[in-house]
Image (cartoon, rainbow over the protein chains, first blue to last red):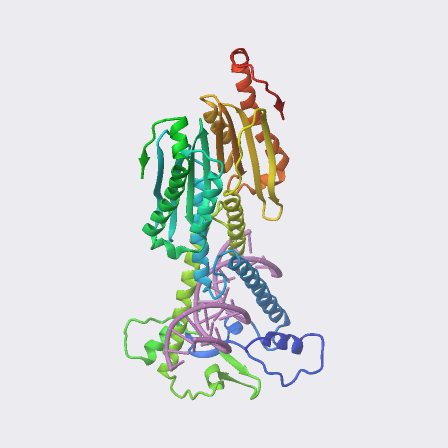
Amino acid sequence: MHNGWIESLMSMYCENQSSRNSMPVKHSLVLDGDKGELVKASERMGKKIGVPETKTIAALKSHSEAERRRRERINAHLVTLRGLVPNNEKMDKATLLAEVICQVKQLRAAARQASEGLHIPMDADEVQVEILEHNGGDGSLLLRASLCCDYRPDLLSDIRQAINDLHIQVLKSEISTLGGRVKTVFLVTTGEGDNGYAAQLEVLVSSVRAALSKILDKVSASTEYAQELFSPRKRQRVS
Amino acid sequence: MHNGWIESLMSMYCENQSSRNSMPVKHSLVLDGDKGELVKASERMGKKIGVPETKTIAALKSHSEAERRRRERINAHLVTLRGLVPNNEKMDKATLLAEVICQVKQLRAAARQASEGLHIPMDADEVQVEILEHNGGDGSLLLRASLCCDYRPDLLSDIRQAINDLHIQVLKSEISTLGGRVKTVFLVTTGEGDNGYAAQLEVLVSSVRAALSKILDKVSASTEYAQELFSPRKRQRVS
DNA sequence: AGGAACACGTGACGC
DNA sequence: TGCGTCACGTGTTCC
């Protein structure tokens, strides 16, 4: 520990106290290249140092204290940021900043995408999943999934259940109904911090598609007959 | 600049080089309190230093170089973050981190809210604006605005125009239609970096309400008569 | 040992 | 001038 020597000097040369002897004292010097000999740094800057000027010492002390306060502010904000990223502990200071950058980019892209697009339900049943953004660099992944079918009471809860099972995060869900038909559009991304899924891109896409298709089939299986009997509207399946 | 003295020593005592030039050379020493005299720091740690050991010098050099690389990594990420916050330049390093924290909090809260809620249009026209979140600390501000009225072709474009004029950011827009009636629900927040608006909270709320009400009135003024004549459904106004 | 990561004090620069 | 911020080299600790 090379800390606290300024305090020692302060106590030695300033007002208070008796014990001005035999404290372990350190001081940094410079090897002057011009003259080729060791001199005190302050001496090289043109100061007289017969008695160490208390003003300079005090200034140096306040300087280091200010610098410590600055460090504490920055580090406090860094720990706050650690609390905002998924894998908070055991992370390099630089890696932490990189993770924060990734998060901000993803969230901003999501917010940008979340404010556009409108769709109306068509007569044909359909489920489609497309990749809107896939930045391999930061693992950003944005999917647009839509399901169009007839309305039934438990449709929404089925969809919600499917979303939960998929462990994905829904950035935006849009539902439009038109004459008993309903089209739901989702903007989804992988759960926070699940950047590992970026590699399993196709797996995620196909699983989302499968989940929505299952919902579609459930509609058909349970109500197709009755539906066809009472309102024989033409219907076609699109994968 | 007190940089480069290690390189000078390296060139003095090591094999390579010619063109190392007359740089001012410094060295940090310690004032040993135990013996009361100046010694080299390495000497105090139990080393012999008759000829400055090239190994120690080299280690010190690589150490400072590694530290410089580390600093460069961190600072590079910091400049990247500067590009992601609104007022990028002329910002304190600590203040920058605070701003990033604020951004992340807002975006996360927005993303969380953007994935819940569903509404169906009622028979009564209505426009309502409510405050979902208003964290005075970081200026986080989240509003839920909804408009319910009859459908008309230019309704959506009118709404979009109003949103643009208000300079707000739409996190989520939900539209549900039911039998010619349409209800649109918006989750909005102040534009990025417009934290100054947090103080003008009521102003924002009332302006949003006014904008939506104007859309409602436009519907009534232009089509009320015809609407009433052809399909005299009962209608009531709710502010 | 030997690199990686952190906190510290210090010189320099700007207001 | 004094105060705040930055980059630098260094001491220290952990693996």
